[in-house]
Length: 145
Image 1 (cartoon, rainbow, N blue to C red):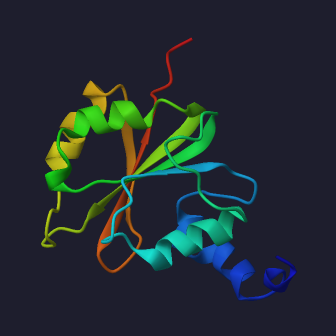
Image 2: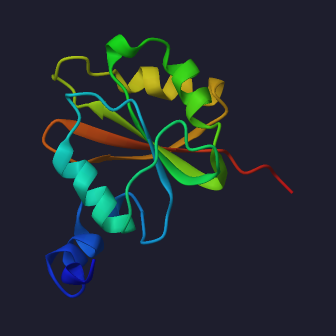
């Protein structure tokens, strides 16, 4: 989209919430757990940042990152994280998007800290990415050489 070159979208790529997720043009990002309560502005910012649409769970190829929208009512977080790792390329990250504390269906930080290692992941950072959602970066731990 040539209209975004040098315009507002380019600025958003450098400093917006999607840029804070470490996403770059050309990354393939898989989105899981989308529902009517997800933040459309954040979704658009991510797609602007990667200069492409996010792919869904039926993509069938490796992805650079996974955006996993998760709510307390969605079931077992460990199972959700294990499923999210299916198409993730080595070195890629899962961005677990959960409602902020105090919002409906928020998830306790201790639950994320407990679920991540069981799913074979390590928690690295958490950031507020929208009015109602926070993002937790989860990666496969590096194995000692």
